[in-house]
Amino acid sequence: MKEQIRFLLQLQAIDAKVKELEVQIEKLPEKTDAARRDLAKLEAMVAAERAKVTETETWKRQQETLLEREQDGLRSAKLKLNASRTGKEYNAASKEIDNKRRSMLEREAEVQKVMDALGETTAQVVAHEADVEGIRQTLAAEEAVVAERIEALKVEAVAAGAGRDEIRAQIDPALLKTYDKMSATRGFGVAPVEKGVCRGCHTSLLPQLNNTLARGDSIETCPRCSRIIYRPEVIDPPAAEEG
Ligand SMILES: [Zn+2]
Image 1 (cartoon, helix red, strand yellow):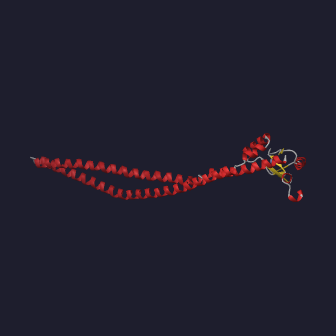
Image 2 (cartoon, protein in one colour):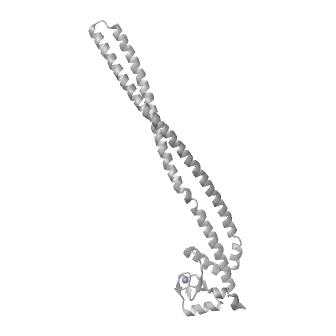
Image 3 (cartoon, protein in one colour):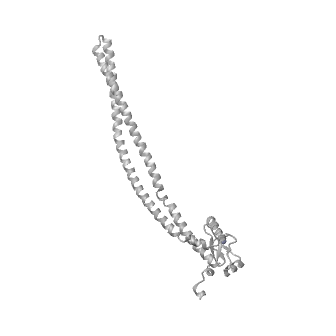
């Protein structure tokens, strides 16, 4: 029975180590998660800025097309002016020319104003895009380090689990079933009893059970937490008492 407890303790030590490594593996990507989310936000912001620039450039081309049409209109108004035979026709053509000139000047001024602002905005967008690219590269480097660390931990976890199957093969199946159930539901399945207290759930055991444990010839479970319990001094007696 003592041998069984020793195997269980070996198994529990291996499982704890493997589990600890698995938790580390699971948590490592969290280190870069926040940075990844921040980057996504920045990328969206810069993309929106870039879209606005593109939109303004489209507007500018539309304005240029309108100006060309107005230029044509101005030319035909001038022809009308030259061809005018009466004072009335002359005045009408003259007025039309003035209106078209004013309209074109206004449009040109507006385009110029927007283009001046766009120059500044475009420079900002280019700078923001460069910043984002820098962040992207830094993050990629960090993620590569994390990935490398995860690979190393996986190798470590495999090494830590070595011999596990051999130990399990030595343990009574019913006992193993209890151990697995407790490990899954309560974190660990085997608990020492010290000074009559189960270290799994910190409950004082009845003296009778504690005495049974002292004999070390049976497998007992804690009445409170159901873990397999043992007295360390019985399983692994101090050297002085052995002599
Ligand atoms: Zn207990």
